[in-house]
Length: 205
Image (cartoon, rainbow, N blue to C red):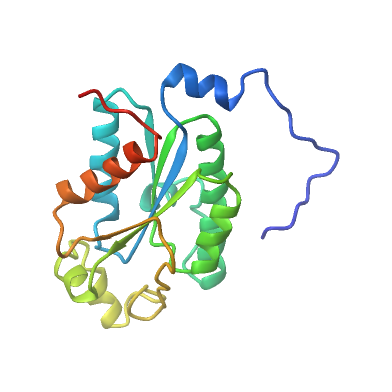
């Protein structure tokens, strides 16, 4: 799925640089890669984070797992190969958003460490922040509004991460947020604090 088929192509560079956009937008584009089990709180945190950034006049956009599968990746299932291709495509999209100096928030289970590492390699140094949204599987099951864990345990949903498919925890994420111990507000604040401390954004006091 990753073979380059197009030939006689080249990358076209515009007149506007990343530095130009940084000065204009008063922020540094970055991909915030939220990874964790289904029900860990990724999408909820992503929504709150985007809202908080926009309220503070920073440009942000969410790439959400379910939403992407409605369009760009609607032809992909959940086999290991298709999961990897799903993340590969998202990594490429996130790279483009980050190059446009947007604070890009991705909310995907992205269960395989190698796939996340490959997404990181697409970005320049300092443009990829891996956030492990950690949560025990029993807590995730309690939050399961879609009933997916129940269906997975009954064998009705195949290749379900944490039940019938593996999840490889990040080995060295920039941030780890345990949502079984932290509220959504606390989790969001932790990411915002990190962004400000590292100079991606500046909040007015």
